[in-house]
Amino acid sequence: MLCLARENCRRGGYEGSFNVEFREGLLEDLPVDDETVDVAISNYVINLVPDQAALFDGVFRVLRHGGRLAVSDLVVDRVLPAAVTSVVREHLGDSCGGTLLSTYFETIERTGFRGLEIHGDTSLGLLVQKPTAALIASIQKHGVELADVVAGFEAIHSVKYSASKA
Image (tube, rainbow, N blue to C red; front, side, top):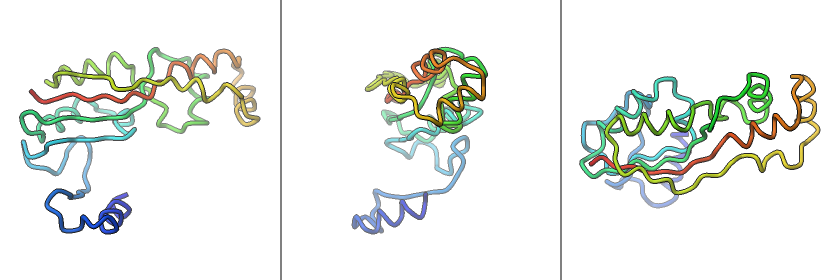
């Protein structure tokens, strides 16, 4: 992804700009000095990080006073049965959002972020309105009902939110 980002930067004429920089590092241990970042953005990866508290602590550390966190991610509004989770993961991969929405946002607020604002919340239930043959086969393989799988997809939300370091 770094190569692609750098190439897009070059193509966009931003190469060498003081406003654009790409660094490789772990989300839980950002290779950035304290209070040097205006905006931290993330697109569908925070839910994959085992220690989300460490991640949000790290982002909070690097943001300047008044800095902003802007994120799109997948979360669940309830715990899903294991068999339903297996079916969902076969179709969405590990990014299906195993973190509970309430826990996710509580972690952000405990870190010290304020003004948490949800800009969008879309259930993934639309993905299974017309089940594919692969989905039906997966349902049969795991011995679950279609209605349970539909409910499972409906429990997964794509959320877009922002919060600030006050």
